[in-house]
Image (cartoon, rainbow, N blue to C red):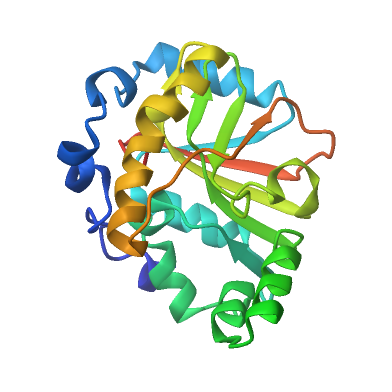
Length: 230
């Protein structure tokens, strides 16, 4: 793994630090780093909901963990995630050291609009779906929000395996705080990203709350002791 984790991820064009001024989001309130006691409580609460947690210190550790979770030749798909980009997953996916079957590459290579939409709908049922997280409650709930649901459709059931990646800066005290974080922090930053990337704004059309997982080993959260994503 040394060859795919040797570079330290750096803030990208769409990292929070580069969008914060125009977004007007309150980072002091919604992107604070919790203390060790809060992290410990949160990890225990998440694992009590049948979700495995890998707590790591660095983005290199996070990337290594993600790659280890993906078997040779696995069918993989990911929703857009600033956190995944910041840890370097996009670079590793392009290098594809384990011969993964990349659903996203198939979607972008399809020129026919209807066929591309059909592939995107099918992609939420990939063997392995990777996603960021918008908020984590200390009580253990994991929260995602999205405009269309393309990044959240895999969460409840569709994907055979769900790999979530998040910085500890997304931990908040309660589920109500988690939903408020989506509205007051994640959305303004995503709206700015969408304006720059697509020339159009964003809104929250779908919320998904992962409260408890029924299938043992289906959901893995890679939790990083760094401020990442939004």
